[in-house]
Length: 318
Image 1 (cartoon, helix red, strand yellow):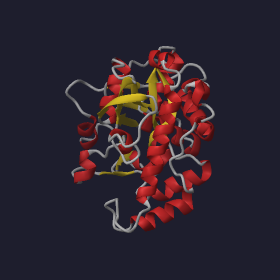
Image 2: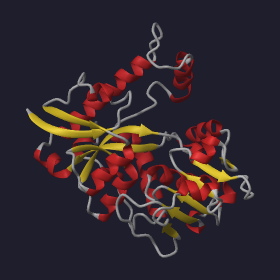
Image 3: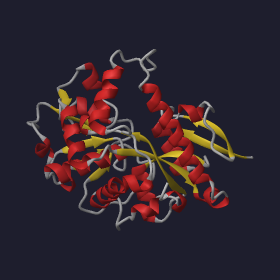
């Protein structure tokens, strides 16, 4: 049996594979759990693992450039609404999304998928000219080249976006982790959308999108050598997700450390249906196409990317 390495984040949706209860048919896996930022840098700079969880933003970028070392599997282990990821200085007169126009905003990486989604939402749902924003970022996991009209600068070595936000050197911050000055209340910083759940639910109703953050991807040389692997991975991860959703609904003994998890599951099912984490290419094509559109509008890609080109052809109808 072929032995391969898999790097992914440990969640309820991947746990059955990480712990070996669900197998990838025909393959044995050496699994390396890790945090997304670390996994993505390894994937983009070293391609160390044969199978990896991968940033969708970086995946679209590398496929468009023609230097992608991975082909995707339409398994999306991370999704997240991102209205809650926008933090603003409360002393700058920023009362709504439109007030972000012309501001200076920090973000960990310009190519980060969370920020890709936020820019797309700001542009398409609130009419914000995101190219008119001055972007201040940390180092990118893979080099990017942007059009000349986009003001994007990497901050000085030894500086930090959190310090810049706390000291008022940037007007806002977008990122998947809340800045320390917001958590500790040490600076005049608040969420742009304090009632973010209401806005995120409205976005879901309007679009049907539960924003995709990551996919599972196979190194192209490995996919070529083992053509059955992408579909086998799809089936295994789909089974692991189904197990997690079933476990979440068990109420004889709560498997999740939330006292009212049963009520939350019922509310989620009513609002989003019985499968809120849909895998599969056809089912998610419109959402993937939106991400490709966002990437082009952000200047990350210089040409349109077909959603089909991101995923192994054997999985398109899975």
